[in-house]
Length: 218
Image 1 (spheres, rainbow, N blue to C red):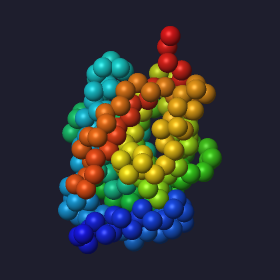
Image 2: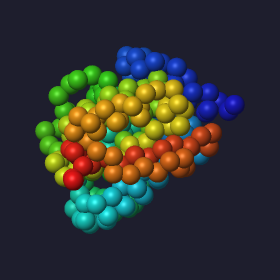
Image 3: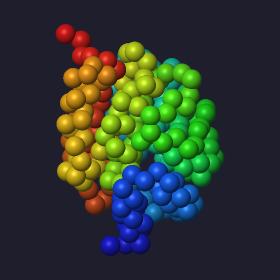
């Protein structure tokens, strides 16, 4: 196992402890991009491609007119990919302020906020809703609980969509799929489609889930 892989795996052992995660990512921020590049991290590119498909196929709007939230933006890798796909209005937040400081330098974001913990029932940090949310690398072992889907849904407009990645190891070791079905039953979100076992990082694939706000139209 490479040094970069060891660093990534160490973050999976933090059991969702926000204080430990925040400190870990503060210390990791400067080396993060190099480490994930070494491990062929393709999640940001994949999720931006799916976001463009959602814009064309479900929202029916040009990318440049869609307000996007990059939830768990890290150093801005997904924001860069979204910009390349034609999305112009992108906000982002992350647990780590240090990661957001690096994301700001990409110039991909209109507004950024650090210290946002999706494992807590806090009020949304931005006083607006979004046509589209992308959430890449957040539903990962040791990071965010499946129930965070309901917190993300608070940021969606009534006809908005959300694209979420889940590492396959996360799916195997958590009750994400059961929680997702419960959230659907409650009418908070509905599953539109999923792309299973798609490219994510060298060591494993991920599922990509597309959700719509509210109940599925009958």
